[in-house]
Image 1 (tube, rainbow, N blue to C red):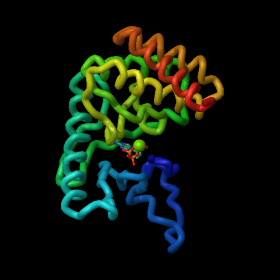
Image 2 (spheres, helix red, strand yellow):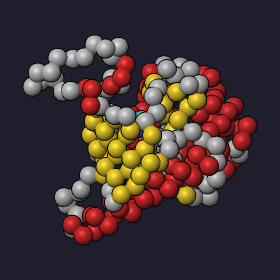
Image 3 (tube, protein in one colour):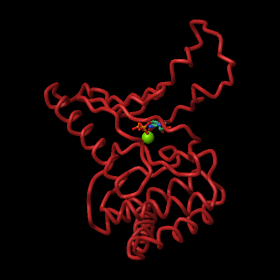
Image 4 (cartoon, rainbow, N blue to C red):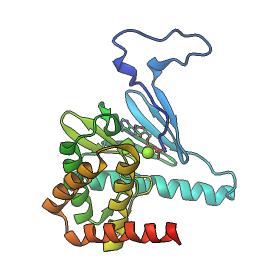
Length: 218
Ligand SMILES: Nc1ncnc2c1ncn2[C@@H]1O[C@H](COP(=O)(O)OP(=O)(O)O)[C@@H](O)[C@H]1O
Ligand SMILES: [Mg+2]
């Protein structure tokens, strides 16, 4: 998801890439092609869910509209509980138009301080029973001293410890895969999480990791 590297369109400091057929016009923004959606990043961000050809056309349309609405609703809900997310500007069928967050993907500026703040914010989401579903450094943007959550494409509402534990587990796995100092980053997250969230969720995340190890070995 969101795996293509990109240069923000406005950070070229006036140096534009040559407009040859091989070089896309970056001044118009950048498009991410993920598994589910096409995300165009310009003055605003336009996220359009792609049709799935293997699904019946009517069912596919209905699902895309439903999931698009759910994603927009959860982005707004998160903002209301104090978690920075882009402002939703428009929702139409399979497309969300939202505020562009100008910043640096957390993947490129991770620190213990940032991971601690992510912990606080995930605990706030969980206090409202919002499960993000894909907490990875690609879906977090550092901007003006704040951490913004984007990509609520897999998000849902669930009050259970298990759902929250899995949410935290996904983040820990992303840390392990992406950073050498993942243990320090995980400990910092735990400190932040405990400011607003419950220890039970963290215990469950640990259990889920152990379950995973057991499955891998057997
Ligand atoms: N509102 C936004 N402002 C700035 N960048 C964004 C915004 N929304 C998404 N992005 C960037 O686009 C990438 C892809 O968007 P995302 O919603 O994660 O789509 P996908 O579901 O395909 O992963 C993100 O990883 C992020 O880098
Ligand atoms: Mg994403």
